Structure formats: C-alpha cells, structure tokens
Length: 147
Image 1 (spheres, rainbow, N blue to C red):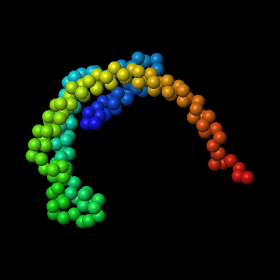
Image 2: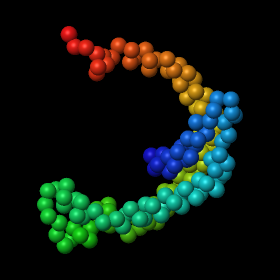
Image 3: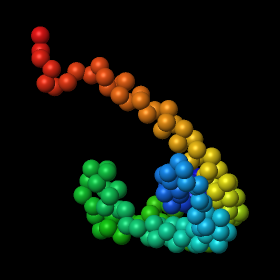
Image 4: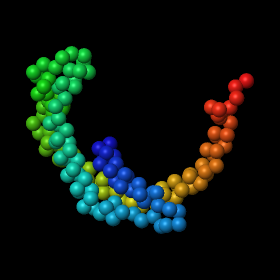
C-alpha cells in the first residue's frame, strides 16, 4: 500500500501523456522509466514519514474526543501515539529500502501500460460522445411551462 502512495505522483505526471491528441503518439516521460526516480521517491517517502511522525496531533485528538487540550496534548506527536518506538526511523528506512525493487517494477509496468491506457481512455471517450446528449434529452428545462 505504501508503494501505491509513492507511485501516485507518477500517475499525476503521466496525465499529460494520457491527454495527448489521438493522432499524436503517446510519449512516456523519461522519469517513469528511470530507476533513479524510484530511489528518489524512496528517499522522499522516508523523509516524509519522519516529518509526519513528528507532527503534533494531541490538540486534534483532544478536539475529536470533545475536550479541551491539556499541556500533554500540546506536545503529543504521531510518533508518541505510534508507540514511541526508538527504532521507528530505522524500521521505516528498512521498509522503504525493501520496497524499492517493487517500486521500480511498478514504474516499469506502468510505463509499459501507459500507451494501452491512453488508447482505452480514447475509445471510452469516443463511445460516450453522444451518450450525454441522449441522457439529458428528456430532462425537463426550468423554463418549460408547468401544467
């Protein structure tokens, strides 16, 4: 699941390729096929996780519980709620390092499937072209006389 969140920005980067005109060949961004991109995303994910673990959440927790935050709530972080494991950073880095090969494989698979996805989106758009007009043809108009 973590790999999904790491690959999500790549799907957004691929959106311009999916929106390419039909007569233009879909070009896959070089970033999608670069193995260094997976390593960069892995480092970003590790840094993001560390930052999130240090995020204060005690006041929000108190609000959800319907009470006023106390002094302890003001210093409580996500790391504290997660159990306060002193090896948490090392464990996260190890998990990210373990996920890198899967991320690289996912990037490769996504880059290979991008042209097929673009073709499927184009075919779906062509199939739906007239259906909106047919679907809205019988909807009463606001200015239509009432009986």
